[in-house]
Image 1 (cartoon, rainbow, N blue to C red):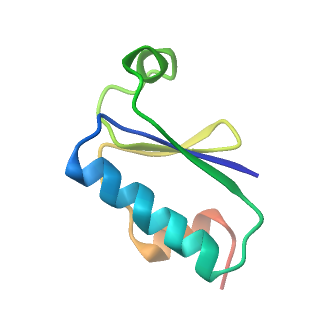
Image 2 (image 1 turned 30 degrees about the vertical axis):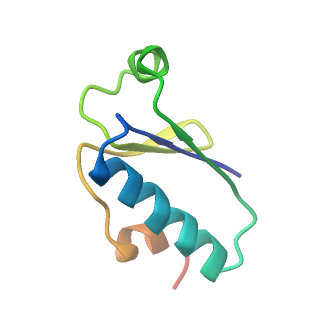
Length: 78
């Protein structure tokens, strides 16, 4: 599974990346996570309001900071 956080390098974007990374580690999920702050890649992905989260190429969130409950939903955890 590939998880991408696309952001602008701001505090909110970095916090989302750290929270999502911690969630993945805490739940022993097999996922590769990366943070992308390249403006061209944000535009290619049609991200107008960072941060955005993509899981296996599917946009899950944009312009907000998701909660842990949303993380659980994305990864289908109870």
